[in-house]
Length: 242
Image (cartoon, rainbow, N blue to C red; front, side, top):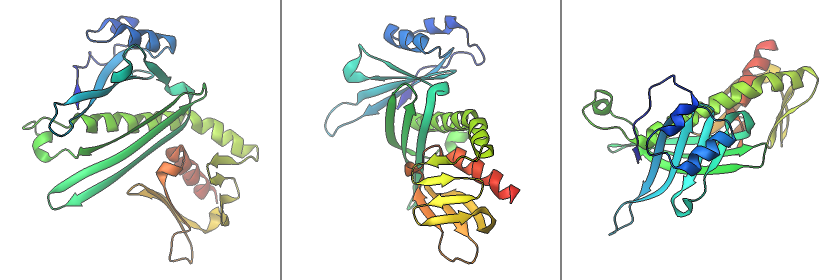
């Protein structure tokens, strides 16, 4: 994983599109979706056995979204604006032990105009040597952090609409899970908010615990729960109201 230098923070003018190394097709895609100023590009690479390292795709970060360009289709670039996102998935699972400290992740994005993007990867969690500047960081971890931030951005945008829907007596859908003012609707029945004791994500899984039950009432990968941060926000809001 590699990255180009980042332009000065806080400059979101269109002039940033002239930054060196940004292909014209990427500039056009970003402008078509009004993504604002350029921030950074993440380059995903792969090294086959007995072959030199090769670029797989580039992900360009802008103020209001990202542009994806696969190395096999350099004449194309696809822009995704955060304001158009309707579903976003991010699951990260950490593996430690025997000197190993890695995170495997999967990311998926769907937009209102029919766009979709799926990414996955593995990175080594930054050690203290990295944090103190004695070793270069794993740039894929930086990309993962950016994707996690995008999940927060989308959740904040969707939250007011979701709260309005609940106030109108509607349910907010999260694939097989549905949230209403009265409770959490699951394939196995409705769990009243009054009996829910905790809702959290544990190593890539959404875990909902219910009073007087030893086993979790819900235990599902967040990779199957769209907008999981929105789900957590709504659950927390409704648990406080009970």
